[in-house]
Image (cartoon, rainbow, N blue to C red; front, side):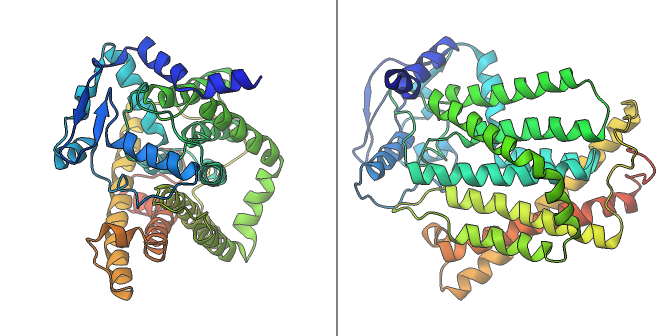
Length: 413
């Protein structure tokens, strides 16, 4: 049994999957960079960060990680005088490449800030509320488990790495797999209460989407098969245990007078009490973003209930969706573009202001990357930024749609 678990956790399985899908390393060779680091078969800066993470797992000390400066991978290589990362691997099947690289984005911030609000704007705020609640719980548990277990990601070589930003994070479990499973099946289970649709078709879509995200983590070389399997299982267990209480949580979130206080204080407390590491990792910042989005949406939905206009679908449930006409598509696209513009504007404005205020309070420079990673700056600036996004998404955006004539209160379009 232990041998099978080791096989699932081994890099050879990941490397074999990559080769089967046409992602192969170029000929073995060593490239010595100007700073003396040796790279071979795709092992670049990301591998150096992974080895640092392995040292932490073995109790060794090391300096702060520099992987999370949000530079593109190519910029990192150019800045360090190294070979472009594309030269370390060869794509022999572009269909699989685009399929899995695109699928991997379904677990990134750009997907969360577009897909989840789109459910609110174009379908039913009730569904968005359910998705955000489950997503936040699942992701927090997954992120904390990573930094408690401290199990490294697959090594390169033999694995080809296509991502660098999160390579300094630990691997077990795959939070991409957890999020994809939670979002797909929470939407399936919740939507059947609200709208009429072929359940078999919805189940097939949920399985395919979550499977693509899971396989993308192998293809990009970021997780072992064991990481992905454990992520799916943990997410399924959380959903199974919590499912009977979803309705109760909805009611308390909307009607309890203490709901907005709990919705802000509890996530902020969890952000500050996030497990400490002896090196910098993006997990604390990413977790703060997720909890802050949930916090802002939670308060926003409570406020909407007080104002008497929630924009939820009107029963009796399940309702029949109107036909998907060209006009409906046009209204949906317009709402998406306007809503996304408001969220991006909110993000940039609050981020700019909060960073400058906090850096002035703590005597730090806004351009100092290390200073922005300090907990006393990173947690409050990210929390305030994404709480604001959650509030704008849940309270303001739909009201702007009404003012612009993009939302008919008597219909879905």
